Structure formats: structure tokens, C-alpha cells
Image 1 (spheres, rainbow, N blue to C red):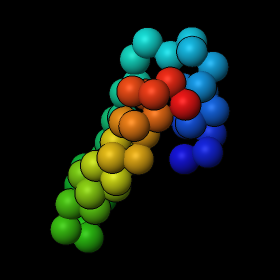
Image 2 (image 1 turned 30 degrees about the vertical axis):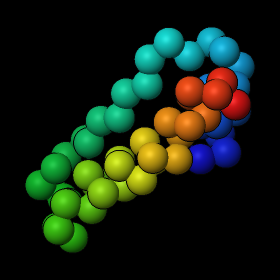
Image 3 (image 1 turned 135 degrees about the vertical axis):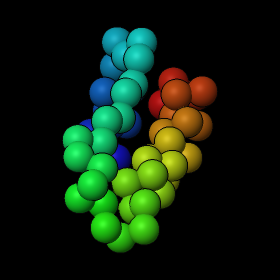
Image 4 (image 1 turned 45 degrees about the vertical axis):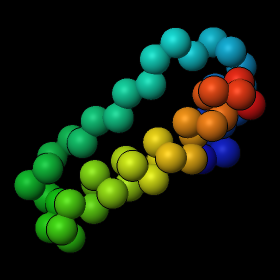
Length: 51
């Protein structure tokens, strides 16, 4: 998270994309989606405030 926030703070980010490489390996009940939402929830205020 710290690295993502630093990149966003550089004001050079115009797009952020998350990709799940192989969804069939996610055998823990959609953990990738949960993790993705956790990341979005944490960085959205940073993007809105430009850190």
C-alpha cells in the first residue's frame, strides 16, 4: 500500500488497473476480489485528496 500511495502522490498516475492472473487458483472463496476491494477502499481517499 505504501508503494501504491507513493506512486499516486507523484501526480503522474492517470490510471490504475488490477488484474487477476489466473482466477482458477483462487480457491479461498474469491479472495482476489476481496483483496482488490480492500486496496480500492484504502487508495480512493488518497486519489481524491492527491495524497
